[in-house]
Image (tube, rainbow, N blue to C red; front, top):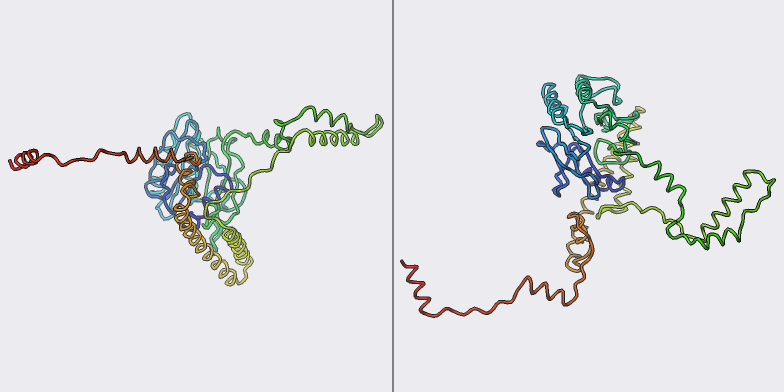
Length: 397
């Protein structure tokens, strides 16, 4: 994230759009203190589990430049190795990561910004740091999951490169799928990487979703049979096979329409509570202007104008994001006074992982709550004079 405040603001929205459950982060901007955040001792590597994550953490640990969490099957390690470290310090950090990675009977995913070069992950050459990483991967039985030639570091004015690596256990490599570099605007100099973890159930799901357009649970078999009897396929024994198939499918389709409703379409993409159409458009503008500026540099043209437009778009996105958050915060504060069960209540309950149902409070329930929290006491009386005197005499002694 390159310590970018804009990247920090855009990250939750990107995670919602892509359905992210586990975020492996390098150079974070801030700490998320909600019980689903782990980071290393230097605050340069982190792991963030979303509210919908199915990853049940059983153990965790951290060191200098890395942090890890484990469940019963997988250990995930997030790393950041700074390019300014001497090679001896770089090797010491790698050794510590290797020691932390020894978890019997667990698969491994090690990912992050390693600031190293190797042809195995798409750079033209391999340097000494890259060779040390490959040696560690060989000892741990890891392979490089990076695919394709897309770069992940794209700072205007610098050469594009790929310092961001994903390493995975050989036995788990077939369950790390759809590795790709996201082309969305991130607010950072790095493009984010996404992939799926776990058994491949997509084929069966896709096949089921592609053919099952009807809600079979609401099928009315009587209407189905009546429709087929009423509109049988219209073909002859001598008709071509293609015509017979088409007529049969048309008859079945009409019967399905009469006998059961269609399955509704997918849900629209979610958004963080302060997100607006204006910020969405500005994010697209930043992406478009950055591409224009990068192309101008690559073609050797005078890119000053493109750089000026890109910089202005980034600045506008940054301040519009800050303003949107501030305005929405004020709106939430005012709304809480008017509607205690509104958006503010839902956000807090979602963070706590609790149900968001609005409690039904009638007059009797309210009276019970008040009486429980503020019970009625018998009015006290001043003690008799002789008790006051005894107390005073005792205190004086």
